[in-house]
Amino acid sequence: MEIDIIKMKSDNKIQHNKITSIDYIKWMKFILRRSEEVGRVELPITAVIIDEKGRCIGRGSNKRETNNDPLGHAELIALRQASLIKNDWRFNECMIIINLEPCTMCAAALIQARMGKVIYGAEDKKRGGFGGAIDLSKHKSAHHKMKVTKGILEQNCKRELKLWFKNLRNQK
Ligand SMILES: [Zn+2]
Image (cartoon, rainbow, N blue to C red; front, top):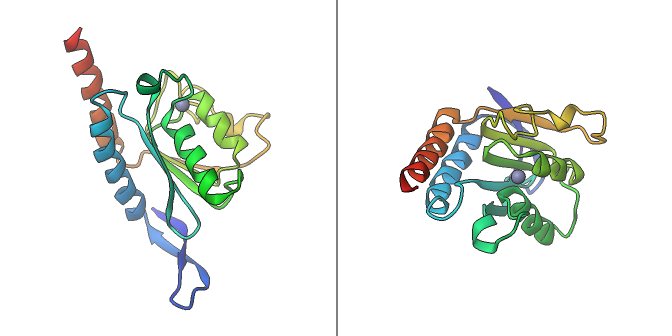
């Protein structure tokens, strides 16, 4: 699979380069490692937001239990951080990478934020807002068109979540 990514050239001009999906995989591996730590307290979900220069400008992990916050989803935490760094609420040139498909709340927020690309690992057939349960990116209410790519390190993402739920059941 080939994707478009903007890379900085040595002369500081921004250039579009074709690279393989290896960059997604690099970030997904980071997300899986981070989620493993998060999984001690929370559902192991982590999101990163990458800007047009390939820099990580936002990072978030689930904080619902820790902060007793129904809005404490990884994607929303990463969005808030990135908008502070960017000093802008628009993310047309950015991408967000997450191990699990965003829920409908987060999917709607990402559409509101005009996120350029959404990349996720495992599909969420029960709650997913980008194809699993409903595809809000294709809904008539979506005023913004974004690219959605799923299945990056899908098996690893699924395995981590499955293990977490199994451990949770065993604790009860
Ligand atoms: Zn969510």
